[in-house]
Length: 578
Figure: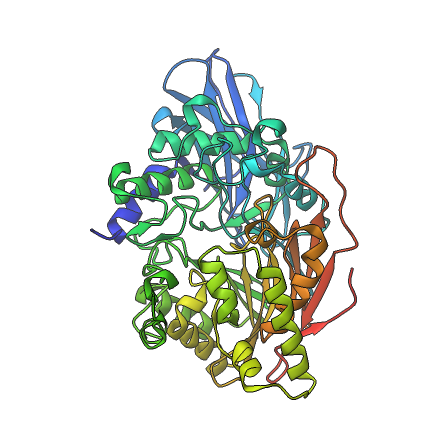
């Protein structure tokens, strides 16, 4: 099967970039037109990819008839637009799904701006965005989100993010949409009908075509909580797998077979829709960053957004392929999982990252990417139960093993059999960096050799985590902060754990996984990471439910962790819960 080439990638971006207008002049006439058609800004406004002097502005303008429409835009320093600093016009067509992007340039670093669109007497909502700061910076605050499954529940998390004060940007780590139907037997859709979160008939199937993906984005962007987050804050986004299909890798996906057509065509359609609907700067010839790109917050933070999913990823390993009547083929599995040729990033992106880390001078080097980098080794008997989905005895087995690990940590003697039960361990999630161990060592080695203060941000798992990142020799290199999901269910659902067992399960996993400092396995939420010269601090916030219109923030489970800069001090330090 042919892989996605750079030419294909550029084509997807070009097709999906909508009507892009680049502002080069000062404020002028917004729109002079006698067009009397009704135009609706059906999906609000959005901003994204802020730089020191520019930001992408987005909207969708749908005329009541016809295949094209002209739209004016304005950006000002006040919400009343008495001080307009840039303005212009752009035309969009049905071929771009009536989406519009403006690359508003010539702006001032660290400035709050307001923007809006106009056409045929209609005016869009007013959005707000802040450019990145320049020079000496005292603080940077980033909200981190991922995994918003529409049928699974309401998007309360987006509303809470929108209401956070003093955020510089929202970092979205993917699974912005999901490709499944909303039928009761589909993933996380058992409550969709009761919640009023089903898809219409023309989109209630697994997404395969460009029209399918476009309609799904349109449904998501009608959600008022998601619209509010986009309206108030700029997004820095990257895709994960469900923007295409579950467990995507560069030449295929777990959730794709030959009966569904050519995977490359499906992937190109999905990426085109992503570029159309997301406020992301289009890829152009001469830009070697593609979806992976960097954002500099003065002298404090360099944020490097990575694609660990589509461009370079080799196919995931599967424990079931190593099982036989004789048990697990440990030697073959070990050889494959440590293969130095296995890659998540691909050679081009890995070289790009190395160059960025070497040349970036921010106090903190931050990787915004999809999957867990921290080691998540669990005892083999737990992994076997998970791999074969035999969950009935799993809570009791987890408790037994955690008790043994606790005894070991306290220096209490264990039998040889007990030692083997907790010592025979392997990676839990082969879709994460644990399935690509050699490349993880390369990335950690880069950061250690360059003496960088490394913070890794992750999503994908639907759960909140904090990990100490150590290389294979035990050297502390950095920390990882991972966000819970917006609405997708987590480990509590996958493992079938009742509420009464959550605390014990979290404690047990925390004991068994070396380097794991914090986890929350059963709540939906988001994370705010605050950077100063003295520390990087992650605060996790959770909502009590996504299954009801009424909800509260569950302050009893909110938590915080911080890490300090400097060699020998890059480790998670526990602080008081928020």
